[in-house]
Image (cartoon, rainbow, N blue to C red; front, top):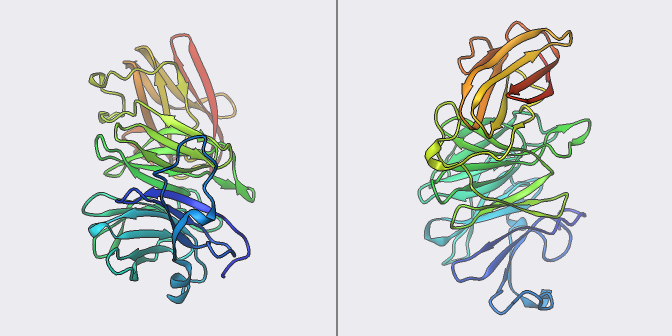
Length: 354
């Protein structure tokens, strides 16, 4: 075996025959770095847990990855592709290993994606997430689009520590899950995030998740997110599927926020730009301004009437930002942004690093 530590199950996925595929991560026991096959059809809640004796088959992936020259192996996600073949994302292999269903033959599908994580198949292409390696730089992660021949091209960059990707069955939109932000020698608690990605636009739907580990949609568009730190499964309902150019919610979706929220900007610290999300349950005059440590207004991001909805604004240090404020002349340092609408006022801190 290739490592002394045991990670255990990284992912579970139903095969076409209803069998459960369990992706085992790196480790030193005989079941590590493999895909395990279990039949859950006779199991009901409350029954005794199944044992290793209930495993019907074990397909080793790690030995193949090492044989291809990989320095390590850590199978982390699996999906079905053309001909219902298995496509396994291996974070140590930095790519995807294919297992043909008819023959059981393993082959290299694609390689060169730094610490590859989530994988999803749309019917004519794959999307593949990247966690990136140490020190997991903010903005250094990418999502790749991979064609049926295994050719990978960057679909979205500027992301951070992407742990999983998924497709919303309602509108076929792509979602990405951020594990967290790395600083001070470790990932920071409550710095995970959920993004919706569409043609270069990254909408931050949630920020502040605590080390989210994976996600999956059901057939009605509800999203379930697992938390590595809290041992919980979060259910997200009513996900917005139609937003206009300004990222506020279309009234036809019947979506109306329940309360006022000003989210932490992302990324933070930032350079050259950051995004600020907020939501308002009632329409009215909205003011969103940026202040320096002296309390002076250095940028006005929003100052207009807005209907109820969710919004995103960019604050750019590149200069000439058309979608938000211009921070091109500001020095590095601590700044504050304040949202005010009606009687609601909230302020948060952000850091510009040049």
